[in-house]
Image (cartoon, rainbow, N blue to C red; front, side):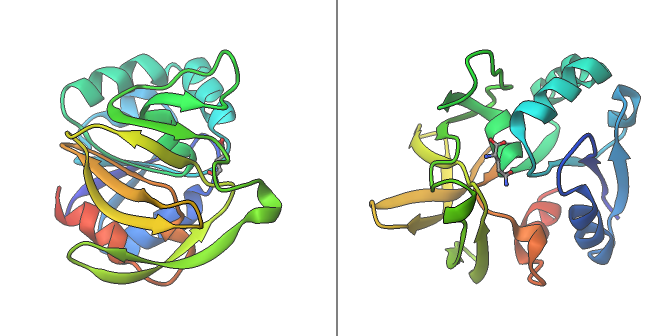
Length: 192
Ligand code: GLN
């Protein structure tokens, strides 16, 4: 049974916890740096990336997570979590930082603002079609050859990756925790 943390500073923590418990994972809600010890993987949820970034700093989790990521901790960032892992943030707040461990540039609210939130089926490599819930979703605009694209979506301006993986780091523009389909989480937990 993998031991999976869910970064629980802000955002849709409860939904991720429920999905992961349903899959049989031993789930830890991570609010303090020492809770990053002995994890097989970590989920960074959606929410508000600037708020989560602020709380990562004030909680003291930021530098410890940075070290754990460099050591190869498996991490899955969804929506705001994806933003926090990316090498470059477009339309970010001027002082917005990120861990830079996923070689993509993401545009905050790249699919439009809250009112432009939408659902669309997404075809995931090796899985099939899953429901995609996009809420003020970040758009992956550029990515390097080191990034494996597991799903793309054309929302009117060409195909953009919406689920990617680079070694131990996974990122997703949509919210797999908000539907009953657990296969995207399973893809991650099966890799642990
Ligand atoms: N647009 C949000 C941000 O920048 C992310 C949206 C989400 O996680 N649903 O943090």
